[in-house]
Image 1: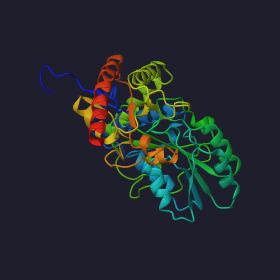
Image 2 (image 1 turned 45 degrees about the vertical axis):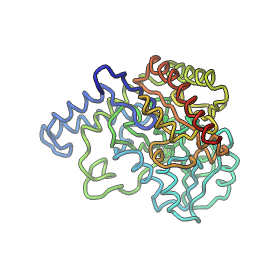
Image 3 (image 1 turned 60 degrees about the vertical axis):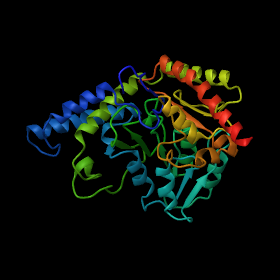
Image 4 (image 1 turned 135 degrees about the vertical axis):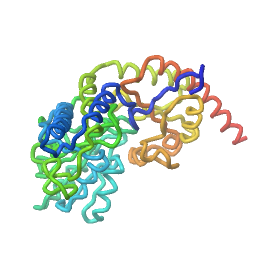
Length: 384
């Protein structure tokens, strides 16, 4: 950034949240601690202590036992490892899941994979889930439903889903990547067999995630073989520094969970946008949503060019999840909700986080009207 330039505004925490100072400090301390966690000497025991401390903190974030936390390279690996297990006779996932759930499920084949519809409010159709579950079958079946959607912030009725799944003898996997640290999670209090979380969504480093095994859930064979790490479930020397940062971020996120400040900022952003552009549509506005997430559409204004315009104005936003934001086209999430092209192709995501401030929102709103007026003027001129 050049001298005198205004600081950039970051409104893309659902893609990656900036590294928290406490996570950075924990990582630096871990990097200075020479030793392999599998070694029995002093240095090895010191590294092991760092890993196990972080494991306790991640467990606390989701109400789990530390022994049930298995560290991975991220939530994508964690989701793939659970969904792709050959043990499943059939797998059903909601139509708005992250690609790291949908793609491995689809690879199981049409005879084993079912995409469950969502209603127009973005929440899973419980009747469709019930019908699928009633099809029965003696072999093991898995249902995968995210706790909250990364594009819209819409929160799924996990309690109802868990009751249905357990009542029909199936197992439940919940992708809690966007929910962890933003809403209260208690794996022990629900019939969730597997839960997956990610470090960099809560202000920890990238490249670290975890599988949490809940009541009734267990990984029956290693994700990676060749060593005894992670209770013999994932071979390979642990990423000690990354795990340390994850643990520190989890502690901070847990302490912030349930605070009302984030929702106040989000509501102010949405009200400001609607005051400046009354025809703006807040997607999922009537549904339970994460307090930090807004998906806003302005029909006729293409999202991908809006992202560029805001970037040039010093504001980072996205047109969907980070895994698909480089692609031009309809979001599968908005398609599943039944949004028409005019809205689906114009939807922008604004996601707040631990570093967001009132000043960020004020500066964004000052820019929103200018960017959208110029964009609309360009559309009108092109149509003339």
